[in-house]
Image (cartoon, protein in one colour):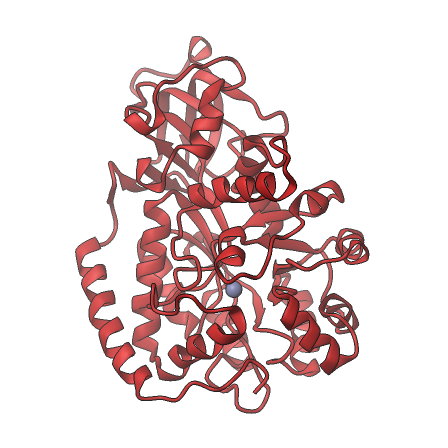
Length: 448
Ligand SMILES: [Zn+2]
């Protein structure tokens, strides 16, 4: 269905004015939004296929700016980051390309079914991840876990990253983007950073890496390099408008200013940061400084959910509780971070992130006829529905999802692939992987 019109939807455009249309229509043709507005202004031909939302909400598809495909969930619990990392690495040493495919299938399926239409994934064997995304139809940004320090050969190589650009960048009509990925300062040589900067420029692509996640990590970085993470990344020439840093929990004022001055973006992962006892990122200060800040789940292994509705709620509540300030991080801010700000962080905001004429039709329908979202008191700016969507909705309330105007999930059923088959493959793959991984010793700490 190339052209269709959605009718009788409560449309949250998340444009620059946060325009809400209480009873609206949205017209899609060839994957892009052609027009939208109030139902009274609808003047489209009657023979155009119509999807009557019957008062359900239409939002831009959610954007997960930092995730990791994985077959691990609920198996590395009650551990701090430094204790947890070696166990996580064991999965990498034991895994095969087939495991990567199963993991990406599982993760992208969970993401899409909870309303995420665009994901940034960092993993190994990412040609497999790219293929999984192409099969499901989700928009995916792939940043391999590149590590080139001795003993880290169980991650990805620079050569694999470069091959992935050739094989998958802009595949699926542009739905797949390949980035230069770098695991962490301890795992990558200066050459890997310099190469990433050169390749990013050459291909016009982004750079994605972890930074400044934990206090103990920051201390270890300072001891090893003689400077803090952000300063070291600056020295490597990595900071800039095409770079996205995950976490950034322990930024000081100068570092926030440096990221703002260089236009560097941040993927904020509040649930993962809380779960791994990393701390609470200074998100309000980052936003105040004008940083581009998107939301990230950090994947099933350290979250343990990919539901960005949870991430929005938690990202707001943790700041309110920590600052004893109920006005901190309101619903509108979180909805923007999960959509248009995420698109800005990924440099995709000209194409996606809001519902505006000319943009790609990446969008979700949230069913409102459910106890956890009632009652609804609508007004011209969304009334209580804005708060209900951010604080009361769940990923399972997402009824349908489109990418490029293509219906990828309808009434909770994914359209392109056999969901049960993918789940069975993930289950069987995980059991074999755990068995192989359990026979390996975990390295003792992050720095060795
Ligand atoms: Zn991560």
